[in-house]
Length: 188
Length: 188
DNA sequence: TGGATTTATTTCACGAGTGAAATACTTGCT
DNA sequence: AGCAAGTATTTCACTCGTGAAATAAATCCA
Image (cartoon, rainbow over all chains, first blue to last red; front, side, top):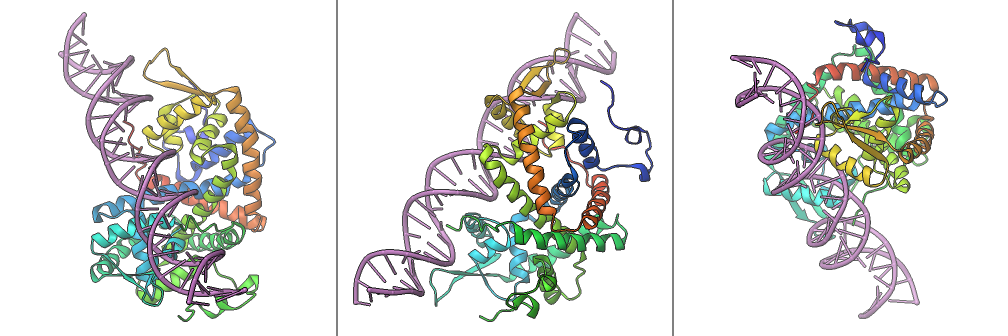
């Protein structure tokens, strides 16, 4: 079967300049199948999804040696950067997870001695969660490694492009936060 | 407990201009806890992850009435835009999924009469997958709706900003594709 | 005061995805 | 030809996250 990719992508030892990301090819395929369709959104959203998938793969790989999942690390980080204890519900909202998921993760982190739970005496329904010393140490040890690796992954872009990207993403995120009914997942 | 957010975020009826996305606040929190840390990567990667999460929520919500999951729709779309039948392995690679996941999804899509499987006569190990008429119709009906909705979600950004964002993301994605050992998931 | 309502969290049954092992087939080597 | 090695796909046992129901506590208000 003949190679259907365009010339530039097919050439051996293709120079850095001429190369395309996968999504460019995907957009071209759609354009051929549905020439009338406006595929512009794929250029943004498809790429965000692919980037997220690759970056999450990288993060998972780096956390595996620490015996942490990304979701668990997310909880640890959220607690670490917060100036005060958080409730289970706040953690669920901050980490985009369901209440049930947070309950499960907290149980594990508690068993590992990383997180401490104290029921609020004013309102005995809510759980106040904080890091233990071990939890804080783990977070403080892991986060810089994570950031270093991420910095390396971004280093392919010149600094002005990184800044521009961050700025445009902030703009988009701000808009999305407003437009997508931030459905707080199954709280119970 | 006192509201610890900065003044701008606290004000009632905060004007569009002064608003910040969540990640800005997260970066400030880290900066306070670890003033020495370079949190720049969060500005890009954190935002990509948040945008992806919100966008995926929106996509899920829109596909629910069609009785499709995003993963299934991804498969249908991949088959639809491809000029030729694809193998299970190709589908796994294109959709960032494990071989096992693709096997499961294909079984469902076959049962729903959306996908057809034909074992290649040359190499009887491989499965050639194509859409049935019903599958193609479903894809052709669903994709434009999806794109319209996505277009609306992006419409908060002026066109030049959208283009700039797409361009920077392409640059990043291209780099990530090269730097992250594209671990083809458990193929078997 | 005392039920009805609301809120915070946990439990439960289940669906989806995973890595590793199993299966089935092909290719390359001698 | 015959068999070791390689490749494509499926099966399996398991983990994780989910939505809905259950539990527990606070608040509202007549």
